[in-house]
Amino acid sequence: MTTIVPPQARRMAQYLALTKPRVTQLAVFCAVIGMFLATPGMVPWRVLIGGAAGIWLLAGAAFAVNCLVEQKIDAKMKRTAWRPSVRGEITSLQIVVFSLIIGGAGMVVLHVFTNALTMWLTFATFIGYAVIYTILLKPATPQNIVIGGLSGAMPPALGWAAVDGSLPPEAWFLVLIIFTWTPPHFWALALYRRADYEKSGLPMLPVTHGERFTLLHILLYTLIMIAATLLPFVYKMSGLIYLVAALVLGAMFLVYAWRLYRAYSDELARSTFKFSILYLSLLFAALLVDHYFTYLP
Image (cartoon, rainbow, N blue to C red; front, top):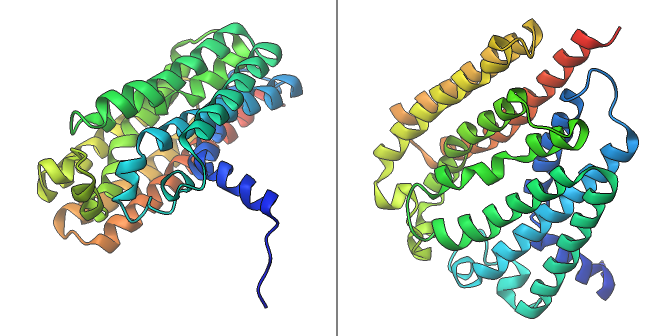
């Protein structure tokens, strides 16, 4: 029996797809963790809900702009050719209007429910991803994901600023963790999708420098990432619960990176990519658990 999807629901699903929901959810999750780490108590509901909603809206707007700019590139890649922006289901003008509406709404929500610092930092992150990374860096250099990774690493700092109204070293440690996590995470994807990237014309590292060079960089960045994850403990921002979790998860990530370096396969690269998402989620969850064991009676 064929299920009939109402036109309105299908249209909403098309617009939602432009916001890259799974990536947006991970960003909001990290932002929420940043909120809770910024206070020894509970985050006010007003800030929690408003901050998460505002960050989600601006992140979604940035991803929509990314879909608009990369329509021709996405059309050449199997993993992105299904997007409504490529299939012509949503026009370029509609994408622009959609991005302006949800982006503007995100700015208003952040201003009303959090503070001006969070609003402008989130807007700067929008510019960093939608303009600096998507338009300038991505087509220009194989180090695009490294240089442009800062915008994707900002969510925990945005969450911290929403609660605390400032950005102390602890907030930047969280940013550094995601910043160093991004290259091995993304390059694992780029390796098993390198045929797509060759067709797209984008100068991704596996295309410009080859498989072996990319594998070495994944291994090296994994070691740098593990070192970065120890900073919260060294700075006494977190305790033993987080330290154990960081070491165990880091060792697991390193095993994946080493196995890739020793004997590459697309299947292993795909598994590494999937694990990297789970890794970041569990690492930030461990920070939160450790935080509550430290501060709550």
